[in-house]
Length: 234
Image (cartoon, rainbow, N blue to C red; front, side, top):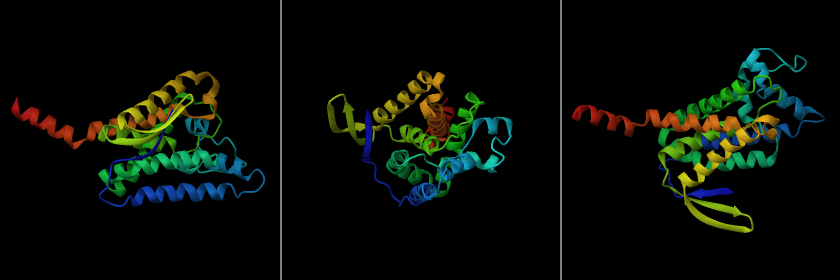
């Protein structure tokens, strides 16, 4: 198991958008845990993405009205527990700042949100009857990880590695850390397909990551320049 702690990839600009996204996620979480009684659960159903609602465009819980078509966006800022939040924000901070530095704050936020939508779309397509709210920034952050893998595959990442009783901090290339992360998500999405994912939307992680990687692969200026050079020289 790999837990990234930091990367050796300095930024030219302050990651303002990344910081804002982290603050919003934290504020929403801390607000949600202040809700009394079953308020937390109601809040998750109101603003989480419920696949069957999106698939059929029909409200599942009319007693608790929610912005149905906005739920793919609002669900990205909900978290079910502190560790859920902390893990997501750790990945966002480590890898998001470089993607923001590459795209700029505005384009980064657009990319982040669209990655989350792509992750949600894939999950809804394969779980159209699910009535369990899908929450968390994982799908959007997975898009960030996919983009990072394409742009900075050789960047060294300080990683806390667990292997049975072997625990060590070691520098690994981003392609190893993120490649392992993606393979694990893919494996779990297949392995847990029959039991609802064990409470984790593994397939959404796969969808977000694939979208992020392909986004940069198809829009990379480097690839465009190579393509143009090839055309002109042939």
